[in-house]
Length: 78
Image 1: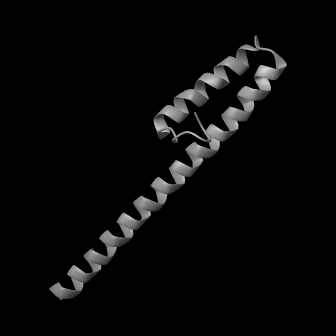
Image 2 (image 1 turned 45 degrees about the vertical axis):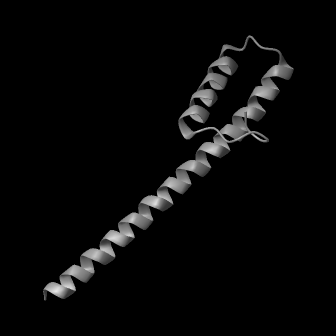
């Protein structure tokens, strides 16, 4: 689901990542399957981090805009 196909939502990617972790922790999969799962998990982790960073930047932009508007309003009120 990651790679050539459309990216998953943050929530779906995180859920899939959690499932991979549970399966790896069980330890009842073959080494080859564990390596494939680890690789997919790494891609999902990167996708989640990317989405979190994008969200953080968006929040910072909103806060910066709000601060500018607040400062402008205070300047006009003086």
